[in-house]
Image (cartoon, rainbow, N blue to C red; front, side, top):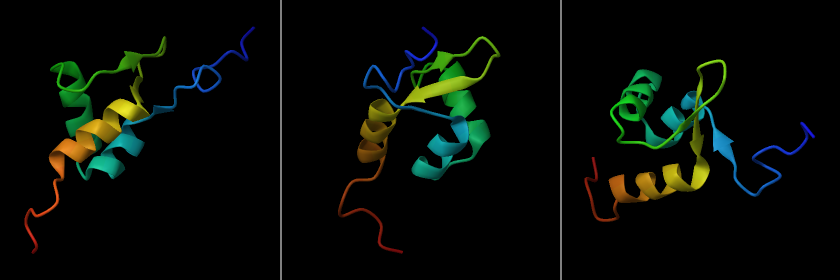
Length: 71
């Protein structure tokens, strides 16, 4: 029964380190955004934050729009 993970259900969860690399922010910023409710997450029994990949990708697209800064 333990094999029924989130990946099996079709959802891929990311760690805060993976999210920080994708968004170009520090891991502490990712945790702060999660605590402030700016970035939805699930908290494991061990107290670690896990983030839905689709939610992170949507946030990344909204943060980095084409035609922005070029420097």
